[in-house]
Image 1 (cartoon, rainbow over the protein chains, first blue to last red):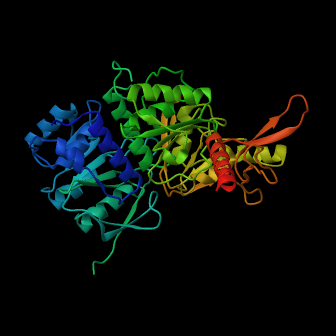
Image 2: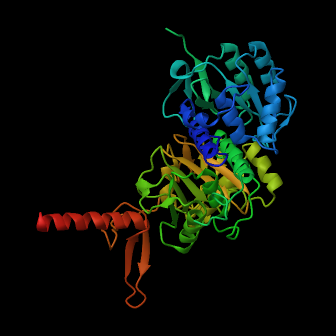
Amino acid sequence: MAIDQIHDLQQVYRKILHSMSRPGTLSSLEKEAKELDYEQPCKKATMLCAMTLLDAEVTFHILAENGRLIERISEYTSAKYAPIEEADFIIILESDSKQAVSQAMQLCKIGNLIDPQLSSTWIIESNRHTETGNLMLSGPGIEHHAHLQTGMPDVFWQSRRSRIKEYPMGIDLIFVDDNLNVACIPRTTSVTETEVE
Amino acid sequence: MKANTHFAFFDEGSKKEIRRATLKAVAIPGYQVPFASREMPIARGWGTGGLQLTLSLIGKQDVLKVIDQGADESVNAVSIKKLVQKTTGIKVTEQTEKADLIQSRHRIPEVPLTKDQILVLQVPMPEPLRAVEAREYMTKRMHSEDDYSGVWLMLFEQIMKYGKTATAADHPVYVNGRYVMAPSPIPRFDNPKMHQSEALILLGAGREKKIYAVPPHTDVASLAFEDYPFQKESFEGIHCHLCGAEGVFMDELVDQETGKTTHQCNDTSFCMEQLNKQQKAEVASVYG
């Protein structure tokens, strides 16, 4: 059965919203991903997020030279491909190098003080997420502390910190993994790496 | 359910646009994110912002509750409920704890909200600085510069004139220590319910084309001075003449003939629940 653009994507949106308002909380897209029966050139959860949030009014950027994926997302969502400096959504694949990701983070848009919403949202593929792990999160949406494991290197969090220090400007992150879990880290969340025992 | 309307009235493109704005609003608590604000079958200024949020959120499994000034059966609540129900076929409820989505005009329910609920508030005037500065161009700059002296001055002048802050409703709040926000015209009584709330709170202003949010577990502080601390409406010594409840927000009713005043719960579903409980207990004590 094909994915239902109305009801399945509504469910995906509600799960992203749930995770965005509670940073570090995982939401499962397993049910919706079952409906996505085509072979995708990216993780299924990535495509679900793209189909939920992208349309002809926004632009996206993919770091890797992946013509097939660009074409597929454009076909599915009518969104336009744009350079990193202009893109509203930036999609990071698991195969992207640390260096390229850090570089992209320095170039992406973070809004301005008057219009902080004109910033980029990142959809990041990573290996398995867990709600335990070396990242300690705090900020709005988190009662005391939350923990998260995303598999992103320390240098990634350093680059992020340099782009969110002038709050309200900043970037919002949506993490997706093979187990079809979504976790979000908006710009308000402070992330500290703790030592792994 | 009408067969010829799209699910939840909107086309999918409109929903996506509102959804993107909502996610940005959650990421920047208290900041008013501009959005397109579609034409709705009810007039702007009558809850179209809240309605658009509700329609962008709602799914087949959701149970909806709509309140207008605490009442489930008031005109605004009923017409919005009907519109959503006819275009989605979802269930509606009057019981706060049974609802997944609660759209409200100017009240936060008495029953504490949970993490699985989303509260949508209708906002007529989203800009707390509008009384001080008429130009949107300027208020946006004031927000960006964290310049809220105008709001503080407004409260100060009220104290000078009336001996206390005289905001009957819509008392401005600081969200997450950064943005001053209009909490929509909820009574001051409800302001503390926004602080560290369990539920996500979304606010929509249709006429002014703004969406903003208070994520759960976020600091919300009502603006006040050290020597003039923030005060809720006091209902001390007052109880509801129907159910006898105390410590909830009350409506004052004046009998036109006798001139006698009585008080009644503003939250009608809460009042009804209390009455049902009492009746159940009474029946149990008589027949049990």
